[in-house]
Length: 312
Image (cartoon, rainbow, N blue to C red; front, side):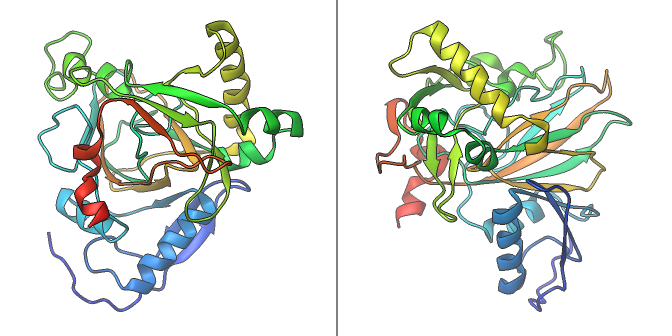
């Protein structure tokens, strides 16, 4: 890979793709040593549009993807429990039409929920395999006042009893993805964290819903009540007006604000191979409307979030 050390700001342009979420950024070649003004412009676009897309970034390899992401903050390790063979890059590969086909915010079962994810399209099937993002700030804003009053004091338990990384392994058990995506390895460490259902975004001050498929129950509600309320709120998050759908091409890069979105990878590509590779920027402990912070019930995320570097 050739790395340019020219830090002259690149004349990027931001094309809005949806009224509530999504923009495409043109005119920038991602990699190491971007001009500070370019990084600032990318971050501002991300905070405004929640997810941004870059076409024609086929020059990137893992090192280039890492070098770009490091300009946005401290990286996490690849995953809290799954050994992917890389310190920072999580390969999400599938050959059996499987993907992260459940609405989720990444890794909410730990206390320091990741801030930003950078995903690179490596092998894209000839059809299908799109990814959809939803704006959880817009979902909160659109809640009627009685629901806002309810959720602002509500907390949820998130756990890693299930994760798409573990469940995306080759269903025959003998494919090339099995070692990287092993269910037993995923569950070798147990995590459980209590998060507020509404968090204050640490950069924008916006209020966002914290939900997705890692939620196991709401504190103070029984299982049937939790299930009914969860579906009601999730339906608000995933309302089509809150979403943007991206049709991948090889060399695309998608970057999203994990503090203000959920996403869903559509598993409709039959037996074609699909591989995307993710690098994650560490985030903060969510803060509720009343100032309380998320609480760890079980499992330390210090190694995943590289806590020593965050507080040094």
